[in-house]
Length: 130
Image (cartoon, rainbow, N blue to C red; front, top):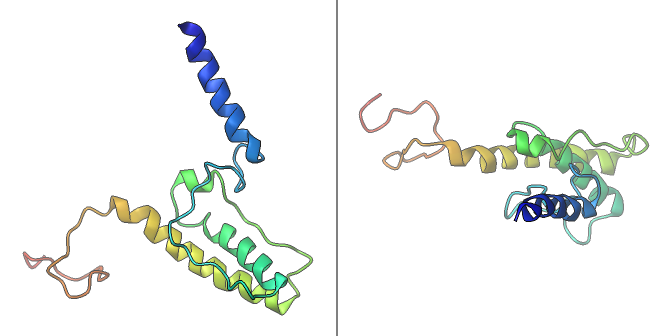
């Protein structure tokens, strides 16, 4: 019986590390927000690489610790001078940072502003006038 409690965690660690380092974006447990945008399939390779690097950097910002354990700053220093790569990097960094922020922290937002016309209004009064 005790052997099961030892083997099961070791097996889970071994399986999770098959995708690369334990805490890398290649791991199968790395979080990815649902329905997150991706570059067009016809985009150039520089654009796709810039999008991927910028998005992985953006997903490490303004999120909880679980995301931060998998994602970090990622930018190809040899391609920074490439305007296509860098534009895609900046665009996806901003997009993925905001998307991951909303996706991550929306679950913690317990306020209910259904009576408001604009649900994104932060300083709007609630039904009680506060």
